[in-house]
Image 1 (spheres, helix red, strand yellow):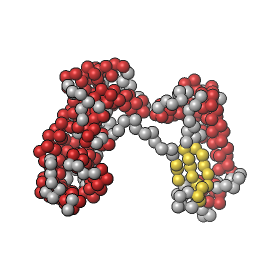
Image 2 (cartoon, helix red, strand yellow; image 1 turned 135 degrees about the vertical axis):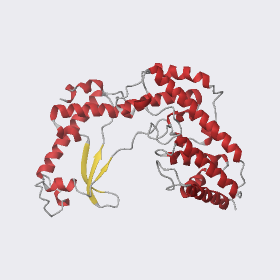
Image 3 (cartoon, one colour; image 1 turned 60 degrees about the horizontal axis):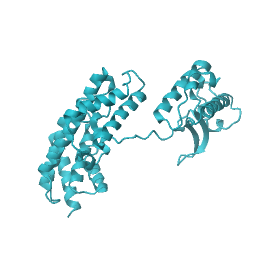
Image 4 (cartoon, one colour; image 1 turned 120 degrees about the vertical axis):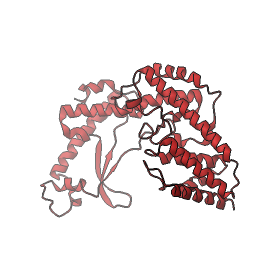
Length: 353
């Protein structure tokens, strides 16, 4: 039966991107549900009573789709998992093996559900999933200042539209209504092409203002495929404008850093002015929209890096001075900005006392 389903003829190649594999498994699950009914939707789950971490023996649900190898092996594993899932559901409905019923609350819940089912659906259960797919490219906030500042060769904004048009022409943009994983893969392919051409800094073209592709950034020329993509030509123009805007923002930051650096560690007033200035600059650029504080922390981290402060210490300084002080869609009061600036400045000075 599994081999007769339409998606069975399109098993991904071994080593295919995990999002493509995940998308294919969704299509296979949809086909299974259409053929067998809603009960089969959980075919990729297993269940056992386990001594889990410090929580004692509890029901542990594990969601794990089998790896994609050859088509024959992959489809066989799916068929075996469907059979095992059906057997598990029968067991939960009948308490046939007595593995789970003991964990059920002795009090009747009035639903008439079997004790085993109440046990595995109770509050003590946990669900465990495999690690999410790693990003092939860094998020802009993962860039170092050395990455962000460095240009691989000469960056000529006038040539960007031609470069981007070539990347877009090489791979047709998915529709705005396409599955989000297909959209993300296409956007990543564009980013990879830009990084290869211009350097790691180019990943930031998608760090859009507000709730766009990458939440809380300084780029206003691009939001996401749903809002920024139209014809391939218009999509390419939007991406090119976003890349140029991102580069201009990085160059603007470099000029701002140059105004303040070098800063002696004991120049508390100088550090306060620099930090307050940058918080305000980031807020103005991001419009204090969703997640703007992540861009703020990134920029302050870059300032600390440019000042020569070690990575681990930079992390501690930002954690103590900034975390929890700002919120999405809220411009902080001037007193809060000054407090953050004072706190960070004094901690830098203490480090070097």
